Image (cartoon, rainbow, N blue to C red; front, side, top):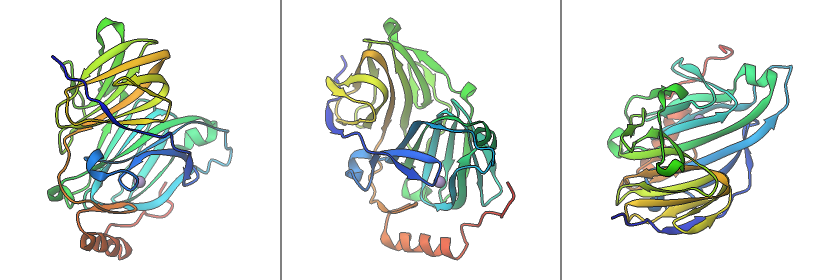
Length: 297
Ligand code: MN
């Protein structure tokens, strides 16, 4: 018998702001605005778009110039459009529709995130999510690493009663395992529900669980949601009840075992103590996190 997780808090739909000149994002939740304990192991979620960019014959990609990260992971899910990234270790790549980049910054790197050259020239619609996932203390100074997860590597499961489909990026649903390797136990599910469909998804007791409505309309645990709203659910219970409105619904479900450690966050650094934050800033300023090679694009 499933016990439905209640909605503890429904966050208002945020206004958009620009990150660099390429990403019109809504910060759906963050460890600054919310109780970090209630959203752990997650730290922040930015949802960009859908936003239309005109073709730009100059070919100068929009985006975010070089900046550091330390102490956590950035997970970039692209729905529409194409991004290009490069970092201080010489790693670079593209993330296109359906792809997920799971970057474990850990002890630190410096990178830039831009529209791809082709997307810049041709223009088009950009829609993406960037999620920040915290690392436990013993992994914060590990070697940085990437998981480039292509759309084809992410399996879907069909929900009972033709209710819709779920792309399992991380975690497990109905025997389908997500390709992402995570440091602590978590689920990251891309949920598509048909109009008026209902689904009950099993999510472990004790997980912090967050449901974001990207498009359409939905009720979560009986609570009505509007697009860009996000519901924080009770750790108690072992099921998430979803019901789509007349237009269907596209949702992102995140759940994870909370990391029971202090959070000291400042900008792109998320550590456990203020001393570690000071060290992160000093290491960045002295070049210990690396620098981007100029003009190597
Ligand atoms: Mn970044």
